[in-house]
Length: 333
Ligand code: SF4
Image 1: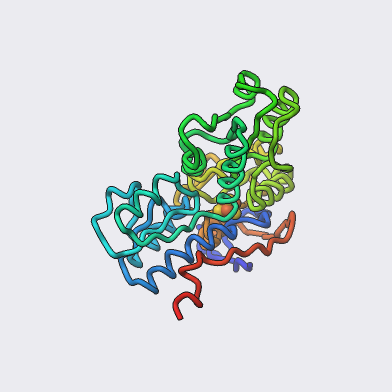
Image 2: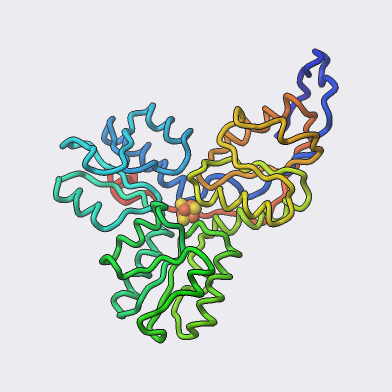
């Protein structure tokens, strides 16, 4: 990406702008689950026409939600906000409790499930543990829609939420030999492995996934931030405050030694005073933040600094999830 010299505050080309080394973390931004969810709403609008109802923000990003709203999507938090309709109802990437599709069926809604396949995988794991009679722990954050959705796959009380290492230390099982755990997909890799470490030490027979359920996108974005954070004086994470994986990127940057990490939704949110006289900056984006917002952020920095932009890659990504079956092109033929 080339940021051409711009007219500085002095009116001179380039002005007296100080140099700024910018390291872009790679991978960053949209993951395969987010692409699939957004494409699901766009495809539903193309197939069925507007409006298309979407339960909860399809992904946690205001820019994305506003863009889809402008095309005819109507966002609701619960199904009871939707009038009786023939318009389809899309479930967000975070997944829903079992009661939601059941309510939708009772109301004869056409439903399209944009739950990320990696979240659905966690739902299935929890169901299997339940069928095998295991007591289930879910490592995650209370109130996050993914956690609400996963807990809602099973009867109330079947899953206990563990949010911290202290809770892992204090947990008292009904039967220590009959335990299982699953995790939210967007957690901090290091925090989660500490919690799992405590559980495995206390309950050696506990059953769980080999490498937690943290998804590839969360892991890769955190790896990239870990590489860049020690090299820069500040790190901008482009993302929304309610985006779990974006919040974790900010924490990872801080822990990896970056003196100032900040989560920003738009360039207008940059606190220039707080940034001070930096000479190096890392930039990343949460899995629900579009690249156009990263570009907007870079353009804002280019107004004040003479940018030298480079990219530091932790790994290559080529994950792709097909659309929900009713939205695939062959289904429309
Ligand atoms: S962050 Fe991971 S689990 Fe969430 S939508 Fe993206 S790929 Fe799926």
